[in-house]
Each structure stands twice: as C-alpha cells, then as structure tokens.
Amino acid sequence: MQAIATPRTSTGRFYHPELDVLRFFAFLMVFLHHAIPHDPAFWTRLGVPYALAAILAGVGATGAFGVSVFFVLSSYLITELLLREKDLMGDLDVRSFYIRRILRIWPLYFAFLALAVALQWIVPGQHVTLRAGLWFSLLAGNWFIVFHGFPLSVIFPLWSVSIEEQFYITWPTVVRRIGQTGMLICAGGLLALATAARVYLGINHTWESKVWCNTFVQLDPIAIGILMAVTLKGTIPNFSRLARTALLVLGVTGLALGAVYFGIKNDPLTTWRIVLGYPSVAIGGALLLLSVLRNGGAKSNSVLVYLGRISYGLYVFHVLGLLISDYVVPNQNASLLRYLLRVAAALAATILLAAISFRWLETPFLSLKQRFTHVLSRPGG
Image (tube, one colour):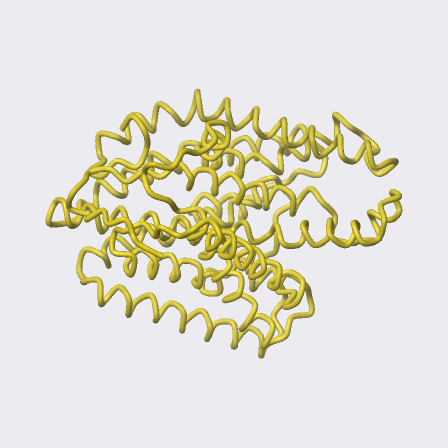
C-alpha cells in the first residue's frame, strides 16, 4: 500500500465523489432495514427458498448499521475539513462552521418536522405529541426515544441526525484548542466512554431502543472517524484492487456480525453482546470507508454520486416513502411480486421527494452556505 500525499495546507478543496457513493449505499442499507422483514418465515410464506429467505432477513437486519457508516463518514469528513481549515487559515472560524451546519441541516430538518406534524391530521396512525415535537425541535430526538420510546410518526429516523448535531456542537471548539495528539487522546476517551456506557446499560438489562439511540453508546463510529482523519494526515491510501476487495468484505462482515452474531438490535440484550458488537459495527464502517476512499484521479458513477448528494433527503424521507407505498401497493403480503412492487414504489417515492427537496428547498441554502466556507467540499464550490 502507498499513500497519495495531499498536504492539508496545499489546497482549499477536499471533495471525493466516491464518498457520495458510499453515502447512498449507507442510505440504501437503512432503507432496506425498514423495508425488508427480518424474519425468514415471512419470506418462506411467500414461496422463497429458506436459504434465500435467511439471506434476505440478514440483509434487512444488517441494514440498520448504515447509520453507523454515516457516523464514521461524517466524523471523518468533519474532522478532515476542520484540520484543513486550521492548517490553511492558522485558526478555525467556529462561527462560520455553525452557520454552515445550520444552513445544511436545519431547512430540511425543520420543514420535515412541520410536515410530520401536519400529517397527523391527514394520515391515520401518525401522531407527534407536544413532548416529542419539542425534543426533536431541540435536536435531541434520540434522547426522547431513550426516555419515552419511538414516536408513532415518520420523524423517528431523525434520531441519528440529533446525534450528529450534538457532535457538531462540541467538536469544532475542541479541534480549535488542541493539537492532533490531543485529538487522538480525545478519540480514545470517547471509545472508553462508549464502552463504559454499554457496560452500565448491559448490567442494568436496558432495552434495545434505549441503547441504540443513546448518544454515548454511538460514540465508537464517531471516535473511529476522528482517528482516521488524524492518522491519515491528509493522505489517501492507494490500496490495490485486491486489498480494497478484502477491506470491503471485512467491512460488511463487521456489520453483519453486529446484526447476526452479536444481535445488538435484538432484545433481550446482554452486556458482552453490546460491549463487543458495537465496536464490530464501527470497525466495519471504517473498513468500508477505507475500501472506497481513492485519489482524485478515480471516477465514480454520476448517478450514484447524485444519489449520494441527496442522501440526506433520502434518509429523511424514506419512512414517508414506505408509508406512501402502503397506499400505492396495498395488500403487499399477498404475494412476493406485490411486496417487491411495494419496496420499489417506496424507493421511487423517496428518491422523488429527496430530489424535489434538494432542488427547491436545500440548494438555495447550500448556495448561501458557500459564503461561509473556507475549505470547499463540493464540486463547483
């Protein structure tokens, strides 16, 4: 393996289209997690052979960890961009960082929250309580789920956005004040804190939803993203095709172990399962990132890159897309074909909603965001 050296001070741009492709596949994992039943018996009832049914159920279960891939990717990119800005400018413009995050996250986030509140007057079964609306409005939706359970609303996937926003609030100030050695120590501290939190929750036999959505539990992928950005030092590993394939297989294996072997999304939980399972998933996400990260000369499929660019909207809208598909393709349990049509309709609806949102809601704010950007991370500025 060789590394393509790109000193952080040498450029005001850091954009890798293959990471947009990874974003799309991370979304697709989460979509399949919510779209595909995790019980092989469901598929065998539809005439699917048991071996294939088990694979489909495993894919559905493993898809939950697309969220972990998002966490690794976001942590790596944010840390890398902050380090590049610090090297380029001699300091960090923390105020501009917060403005950029607000312009990127808040317009769609709060527009969708308002839409979800309106839906409860139109769609049976949708309900956003005043308490849930308040917690999600404060970007603490994950803590609402920890203490009160999942809301009966399409807003529930926003819990992971809350965790990312909590990371964004604190990390730039830390990066501004300490060096890279200190950042490595901080990342190690985050890993230790995550382990301690899981030991405590495991000993107290905490239910899965209270573990899965807990910020402290989910610190592993964030810490590993930080470690990657600091240790790579602005370079891009130049792996051979065989090495990338091996990293890809090992990454998927790490995610699958979390779902199938450790079963960290299944109650009742045990301490050893969650203590070992979450790091397995975080390492798997990091290996996936390493398997796709390439130097600037590599090309990526333009359609997948676009889908990755709108992946925030895809993630936000996908449960609504599944809800729409229930009306477009009713009685999907009647046959395998109807169920697959339902999944296809949900994905199509999700892509359409995300594309509309990206073009008409997000893009104006993204254009404004560039005024506060020192290190460019998108094509065209």
